[in-house]
Picture 1 (cartoon, one colour):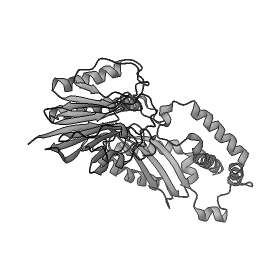
Picture 2 (cartoon, rainbow, N blue to C red):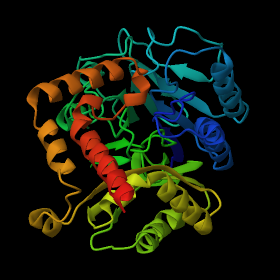
Picture 3 (cartoon, rainbow, N blue to C red):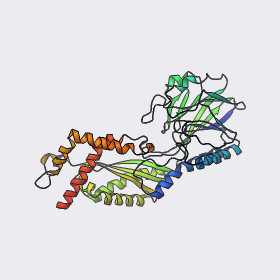
Picture 4 (cartoon, rainbow, N blue to C red):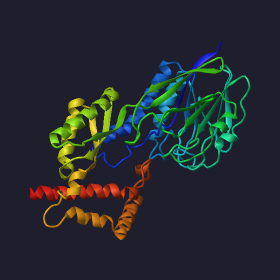
Length: 416
């Protein structure tokens, strides 16, 4: 009987900063930047401890061109540990570390095998009767259906396809090397080791088609546990998949409904209560949480006007729950109670500022000008900042809503 376990990883994005504009704390930014490296180090530790037969990395080892050789030297140091433990590594390049994107390199151990980009290649492990097929990205954008270029399965062997692909489409991920599950099935492989999509997903069990997800969340939208997949194989068939969680920092989006809340103290109580479950799930890890306040409340204007005070109090509540819990951002999406709006009881003074602002919001010319300005701002931002986020110009209504609440809230406070 032939039995072994291999490790399937993807989307390491080594060298990636935390993507977003809201994280201004330099120490937090540093910790988030190192979290990806720490997770990869933990992956290597686990691979050695569990005596895996080999490691497969399905693309995007790096986040882009190196600023210097430090990130390449780090990767080399870690795979050299695998080499000394007798563990081979097989990898493809994806859109973030395509041949034309990452042009610098360091010499890796001979036990690291990289699939070429011009045509697919196959690597054999005779002692295990395993053959791996793969093809790297030559450029950031690959529109070709790579799966159809892969060779047919080698009969009597355990065949693994290593592919960086969006498969049938996984928004917001770009549709690179698209293919269907049927395309993959026609190759006759027993396992497809996919990369590119940052969420863990098992697309099929016959054959196995698996995204392990990335090993560390790198933007506030990449929430939940992150890691790799351990694949157990006995006599040429997959007998088990086990997810190995490796992330060193956890990210959470926390919606809080303030509907009916009439005091700041009550609002803070709801927020603290909503944070308890994400803190529990983080299991002692560094936790960055984005709080999104929703619902109809008479506090709508006050919360907007006193946003910094509220954020400070929310951070204090977070630290009461766990010392390593931090508020990444506080998003205000509350609204005035409809009953007050309909009766006109939210007006201030002789003129109704809310009505004046609403008139400006409805002005098509002003909206077009504002969207153009937002587009210009977005164009000056690094591409990585918006990775996986909606275009800034599409957020106009959200920005207008927040600005309206802020202005009206401060007017209300001045009149009180």
